[in-house]
Length: 324
Image 1 (cartoon, rainbow, N blue to C red):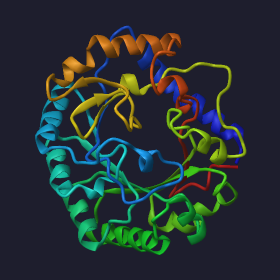
Image 2: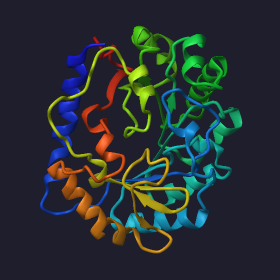
Image 3: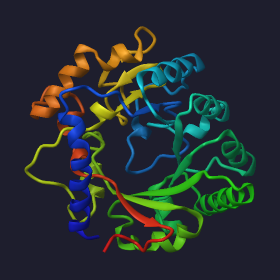
Image 4: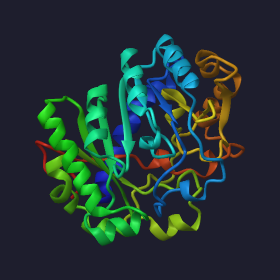
């Protein structure tokens, strides 16, 4: 894994977001992220979900409808139907997708793909889902099942192949992506992701492991890739405070998509509007703290390295692998 490749992409990502962060006028968020559920069917070694103390549950359809209605008024264009859990656990997810599309949102989700079957895949396509990203993380059975504890490699491949086949049969424009977190466990096989998953997806994304806002503790040091891809000696504010709103299954609005214990909640959608939350005193103060780097009193942010490590696109249908 080439450090310079990652560093170059991180710099490009930052240049793209810096105008938004430094604008004198607050822009509306681009994306609404909904934690349909914080429950998950796996216990991945690089995830905080297995040790989450917050009660598992599901977002109410009342909160979802309010978020969709007010999000459109606020100018939001994208809806991400996932944060800390496995969204395919949500019983009425196809109805939620249809509802999102009725507001003309670009609608997408990330899933581990293990709960897919032919019926579910067909329903997702018919509902109008714009894209789905399947978390893969391993290029063979041993590697995958060591990382994604409780997962079955054969089932993942079968479900992904079937999803792709259905999309082609139905002549759908839905994009299928794959994503992997690069750790010590899988870094030696990084170029094999294309061979294994390339025939079934439109793109593969590799991301070096981040410390989950410091929540991984010693596990991060144990698992982080051998090549350090982190920008050093330079503070960079987290663009999430400027470009998205994250709503937890309880209807709380948090500044972080990996806020497993609701530590960065700044508003309650049960009590205020999205517009009021976006313009609230608390989040305005947090944006200023991020711009100045004065985040010592902000839980999660003060121990997070995610702004220094950003996603790298690896494969497109017309491209070779981008990692040297």
